[in-house]
Image 1 (cartoon, helix red, strand yellow):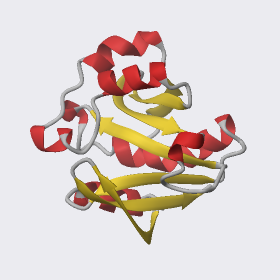
Image 2 (cartoon, rainbow, N blue to C red):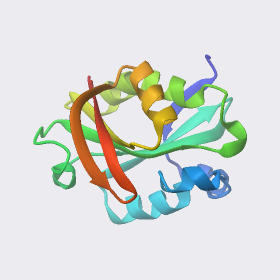
Image 3 (spheres, rainbow, N blue to C red):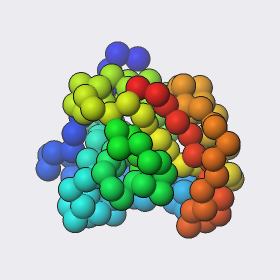
Image 4 (cartoon, one colour):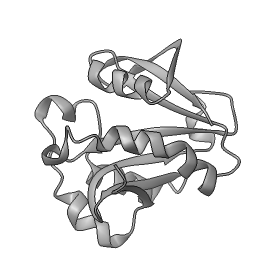
Length: 158
C-alpha cells in the first residue's frame, strides 16, 4: 500500500477533516478530527497528524507528549496516540493498519527523543485492539478508566 503517507496537519487539510463521518457506535470511542484539532490549538503538546491516501486525507490522529500524559506513564520520552479515526467511507481499506505500521519511523524522524508509543483502547472496541496488536502494540496488563468505561493501555517500543 504505497499510496499511504503520514503528514502533519496543515490548513489545507481542514475542510476534508471537518467533513469526516463516523458511525454512531464509533463516535463514543474517539474524537472527531474537528474537535481534536480545537484541542490541539489550545494545547501545543498535541501534534495533529493526517493519514493521506493518494494525497487525500482519509484518517487522523494526535501525537501527545509532555507532562499531561503522566497518567499513562512516567517515561519522559513517551508519546500517546489519541483520537485515531478513519473517515467512514474510507474504512476497511487498510489505511489505519498502514498508518500504524508507518508510525514508528514517522515518530523517529520527527521526535527522535521518543522511545515509546502508548494508546488506550476501550474494552468494547475489540476491532481496534486487534488492529493495534497486529501492528506491534503490546498489552502489558495496564488498564485505565476512560470516558466510556475501562480501556486497555497498549505499548510500542520505538
